[in-house]
Structures are given as C-alpha cells and as structure tokens.
Image 1 (tube, one colour):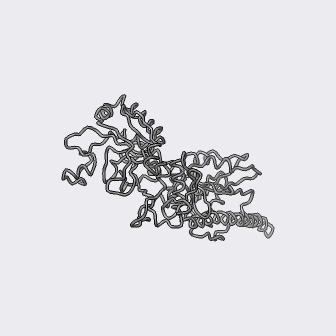
Image 2 (cartoon, one colour; image 1 turned 60 degrees about the horizontal axis):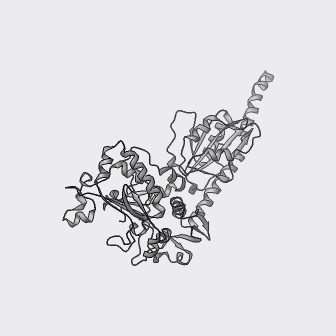
Image 3 (tube, helix red, strand yellow; image 1 turned 90 degrees about the horizontal axis):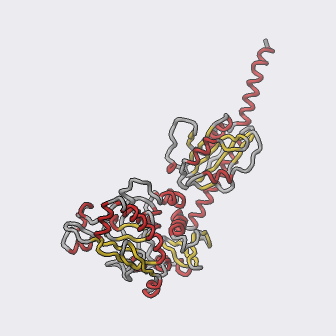
Amino acid sequence: MFKTFRLFWLPCLCAILLTGCRLAPREATASPDPRTGPNLVIFFAEDGATRRTARAIARMTGGDLFDIGGKTPLPAPLGYDTFFVGGSLTEGQVAAPVADFLARTDFIDGRVIPFWTSWEETGDLNGEFEILIRGGRFLRGGGFRFQKWVRAGEIKGMVETWAAAPLAELELRQAAGGDMAEDMAKLFSAAYPERLGPAVFEDGEWTLEMDGKRWYFAQGRFLPREDAARPEEFRPLYLYRYALEDRDDPNPWQPLANQILSRRLSSGSYRGRLSPTPGARRSPFYETLWQTRSREEAFSQQQRITFLGWSVRIHRDIVAPLNRAEARIAALAENDPEIQGWIKSLDSISGWNWRNIAGSENRSFHAYGAAVDLLMKPQPGKETYWQWTAAKGIDWRSVPQENRQNPPSAVIRAFEEQGFIWGGRWPWYDTMHFEYHPELLIFGTGRGTGGSV
C-alpha cells in the first residue's frame, strides 16, 4: 500500500516542483513606478508557456490581459501607454495570428514590447517585429525570449528593463519642457520637411534646424539660441484644434498625427497651457520659415501661377500643394454640377498681400503668400466674412451655416488634403479664405477655436 501511495504522489510532487520553477509566483515581485502608465498584455497562446508568461507579466506590471484568439474585443489602445505583445515561435517565425493582429492594429504612439516563448534557439526577431508594428514605438533594446521553462526571475528582469525605458523617457521630456516640447518639434518637422530638419534633442532642449541654424523650443515658442533664454519676450505659437468636419471619409492626416504626437498632448488642450505676454514681440519663427522678414524678401519668394483660370501670386513653396488641390477640384468638377457652378461663380482669387491680420500686430498668412482668397460673386442673403457682416449692422455670430457663402464641401476637402485650412471653420468665419497650415491638420481634429486672416 505504501508503494502504491508513493507511486501515485511522486509524479504529482515533481510536477508541483517543476511548475514552481517555471512559473512566476502570483505575488508581484516587481513594482514599476506608476508613472510608467497603464499597460496591456496581448498574447496568442499556442502553448501553455505563452499563456503563463502573459499572465505573469500582467501580474507583475498590474496590466490588463487580451487574448488574440479569444472572443473579447480589443480594448481601446488610447487607454494604454505600453503594449506587451507575445506568442510562441515555430521554426523561428512569428505566429500568423500575431502578424495579422499587428498589421491591423494602430498602437497610437504607445510603447510596443514583444515577448516570445520558444523551445529552440532563434534569430533576432526585432527587425521583423519593428516593421510589423503600426503607430507604436518599438522599445529600444528589442524584445524578450523565454526558452523552455519560464522563471519568475526572468519575468522580473523583463519588467524592470521595461520600467527603466519609460522613466528615462519621462526624465528626458521633463528636462525639455514635458511632452509638449518633443511633440511640437516632431509636429513642425513633419509639417515642413522641405524647410526644417528632424527633431533633435540637443543642449538639454528639443530643437529644429532651419537654414543651418538651430531653433530651440522654449515655453511654447521656437526661438534661436540667443532668444531661447527669454521666451516671455515673444508671443507663443498659435495652435488650436482645427475641426475636420463634414467628412464621410477618414481624416488623411490622422495616421501621421498618431505617429508623431503623444496621446497626452493629443487629448489635451494646447492653447490652454500658454497665454501671450502683454507687449511681447512677434516670434521670428514663421517669418524665417517662409523667408518673409521684410516686404522685399517676401516679394522675392512669390511666384505667379494660374489657378482655376485666375492669375494669382503666391509663395513658391505652396505652388505644388495648390496645384494638387486644383487638379483634384478639376477632376471632381467633371461629374459634379455644384462644383462646376462654384467655379463659374468666382469673382476673384487673390494671394500675396503684405499686411497684418485686421486689428492685430500679427502677420497675415497673405503676407507670406501662404494664403488664397477665393471670393464668389455676391448672393443676396449670403455672408462671406464676419467683419463685412458686422459692417452691415448684422450680428455676425447669429448667421447660420446655410446663410454663409461656403464652397462645396468636396472643394474644402480637396484643400485640406493638401495642407490648407479653411476660414469657414473658424468662429470668426472667413469662407473665402484658405491658408497653408499642415501643422494644424496634423495637430488634431478637435473643434477649432480661432484663426488668422
């Protein structure tokens, strides 16, 4: 009887001991700094090792679990800062369900960390994985591979390595002015690649290079080194949530925004964090960007083109996007009587005009040659520009959209797809006005709160 008892319990005891060696304990042995943010552990369990590893990572990081092969829908990626993505390897290859999941998922600027379970030695999968991910940022140093038995110490080491990366990033952001500094440098670099170099962290600040000179982000302004120490003397960049409304198709700028802007900035309010200093000087950034620091210099940058049959003088840097917008409008007009009628109703098209915004000391984008006005022939009961409406003694704020002289929505979209914003989306409406502002289109799709004319 004793022999039978021994034969029965000995395998069970061995299994318990082996399980304890390969599984992380239920109690967390690592406590990452809460500033690392929420995380989601995503896995496809072809074998028990992957499932055990995923659960152990979730326990130690306080993360949520998502099974790719399960029936529960994926949680909203915007709610997480880090994504652990794992599966088992067969002959050194990523499982097809994992690759398919990566191909259709946008991680929206989150950190993406792969982990693999494998019973064999495999090559370096970091390069393949980095190509597969969309929208996220691959953790520097690559993924983690667990061979044979999954031990608690290995999971703990992985968690500590992961926690160090976001904390180092946090320190970097704080040193450079927080999330805003890096995001703004990336934003303008992506918006004006012909004029600005890539965003670079240099001298403890996020910077951009323009015309061989480095510009530093300082409290909402891009300034040259000699001015960056006293940013309060200059007006901050005027950014706001430009609203891409009336669209029945995806926002073409959203993928780029997902790549370069942090979720914390994208979901917050930029304008609310900065306020102009009374008496502050106009920032030299835009005037340098457009090479329009004087009327003479601005004129030298202009080029006369024909647009929708009208001769117009505009900045040479917007000739190409304006030509693309014209080609799109012409193609749409072939089968759209509304657009055909709008083109015939145009009374004038104007571009470069050296002046300030009405009632302001800020330069109009017309002074740069980066704006065009497409004025329609007057129509009874239709309003075009808020100041013209006010001059008639009409409360311009009470004029509904149907009483404004708006271009067809397809025309507005054609401009927006090429980097132009439309003044008709401003509360202080200017329905004839389009200006080249790709940074606003990338910045976000929240409701616009103002504009320049």
